[in-house]
Length: 212
Image (cartoon, rainbow, N blue to C red):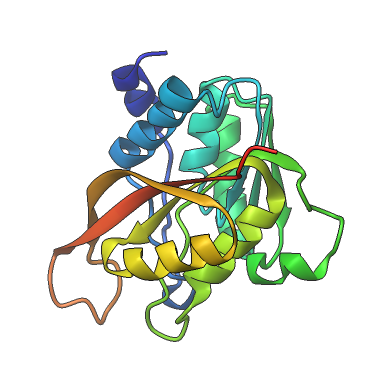
C-alpha cells in the first residue's frame, strides 16, 4: 500500500465526539499517523507480520493503519470505554478483523507481571504529553511500552522533553533515535482553548533494545 493510499483510508476513521480533557484525548491526524506507520514499515520492517500494541489507542487510527499495512494482529489498549467503542466502530466500518481491544489503564499495566511482559514485537503510541494534572504520564507510558515490546517502540513526545527522554533511555539501557521532527497541530477541542489551533513541536522517536 502506498503512503497516499494509506492516508486516504485513514481519513475515514471517526474521532472523538466528546473528548475528555483529563485523558488528553487529542486525535492523531491521518497525515501524521500514515507517515509514522509507513516509516516504521518501509525503514524498519516493524509492522507487516508483526504483533503490534497501541497504547492509549483512542479511536484507533494507529491500530487501523497498522492493520492495513499487514500487521499480524494489533491490540489496542485504552482506559476509556467510549474511545474503545468508537475504535470498534471504526474497525467494523473499515472491515478490519485483526484488531483486538483491551480496556485497561496503561499506567497500571506494569502491576500485572507476566500478562503483557514482552508480549509484542512492536509498540506504537501517541501518549498523553503530561499536561494539566497528568505530569509525567508520558514517561509512564514509555516505560510500560518498553516492558511490553521485544523489538521496538515508536512514540510521539514533545521536543522540549527530548533531553530528559535521552537521559531516561540511557538509564533504561535502550537505544533512542529521533526519526522525525513534526509540527503537531492541536485543534481547539476544549472550552479553555483560546486559539483555533496550536502547533506543538513533537519528536517521532524509535526506541530499540541492544543486540544480545
